[in-house]
Image (tube, rainbow, N blue to C red; front, side):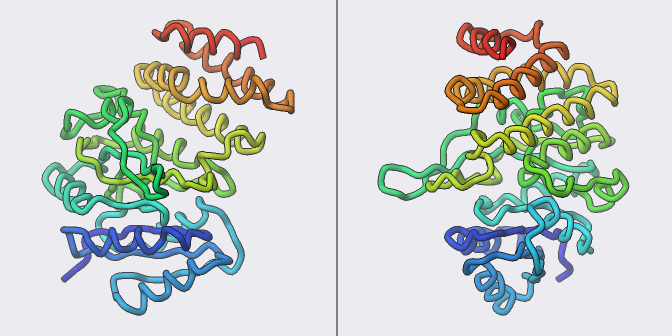
Length: 318
């Protein structure tokens, strides 16, 4: 049976989670997939888990980096090897829901759109140390629910809030035609690529189904859990800024406004709380400069609740 989709699974030192991620692929109701497992020079048992999967199931292909190159480079390594009509991504510490590939590929088969985007939930540790899936957050629902077929970012600007690579399945020819590539050496690389996808697609589809459980690691080692570090903050802010610039350069003003609203209401508040007690004033300066830029892009007209408005006002003075 010819494979329909290649799922690119990058991993670096994720031995505690990789087996569950790969099992979520094996459990897909759509079975004609292949997966490229990119071991980014792991120092733990990740490479052994990947190797065992490739030895046991021919649908898995193992690729190894001799030196660590980062998540972007690992994903790009996988993309270069794709030979199937569709491609998607799964981080090796996350979990696909059983019907994820069937739903996303099935919608694209019906519509001919360039890509499809689904909903996701966080997978958080509970009191017993086990991981439990949460609910679909409002900004995720705003991007994906109700389901839309053949829409555009102009018609559906709130889609810009879904910026993660692993919630989407794309046509491989779209990925290459659009010149998409993750920026090497950067954190939060999804944000820029996502806005390029929305801006360059002829049309895309949204699916309200939860397709991924996104793990928030109990040990706090996820990239998204390290925002108190100044280099991480700078990459985070740069990614959001460049994403806004992609939307603005292509004339998608409504999407810029939607994205600004979401950044101010969701991304900014926890960063302000960190900044207030951070020992390095450079952290506050970087955040203040970012907020002033976002404010100039339309933040002054964004509807904010009272608490968020106070935090924004504080950040403008950093």
